[in-house]
Length: 268
Image 1 (cartoon, rainbow, N blue to C red):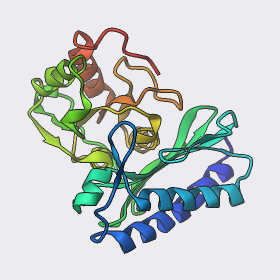
Image 2: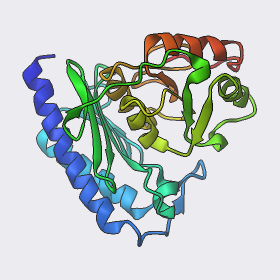
Image 3: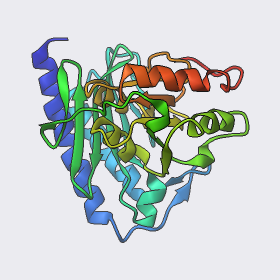
Image 4: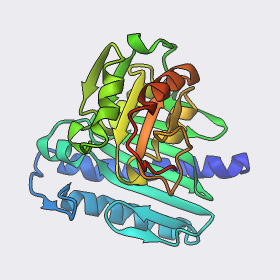
């Protein structure tokens, strides 16, 4: 992909993050009503309002691009470029007023994520990663930690309730191998991994909306992020992910969970 193209996409993704952040900040602290979706996860009018605005902007700027959104589904996902949107990742935290939620924006080229944005609108922290560019936090380059020993690592997982009985042993095997664990960070934890504050993250997400933006952010900060079998994450991945600060730590974490993976874990 030409450098000029990715620069244009980065600038456009920045504009979308500004727009989503303005909507979320205006609503934060006064929104506590929500609906439950089919999987019993919550959705608010702000989730829908943000995604509607982002879709409008994509449709005007890049009508030939596809979109896969958390709230309104997929359109033209066979296009070379597909935007993947999670308007509020961490809706439960948003409703509760705990600022670990954020907007996730990813751009996949032929199924592979090449641009990712993790935007935390309340703290105004924005991580951007793109192929050929170093990951930045508010314009300043960041890098993952240099920790390579699993027993010394800080682990993160977003929500223990996401693990079913078959997959919970995967998390428990990794948790028993690290120094300590933080919980409930949602997308914010992956930004902190890119900045060196967290060393390993594991989650059992159910869709690519939850994870694709993290891929360029972490990879271009020096980290590694894959599915639970070590395969690359793509537009067609299940959402299960394992991220680490560097290849050595990722290999150690992957080896630790290998014997605990549930049978039939889908690859990316």
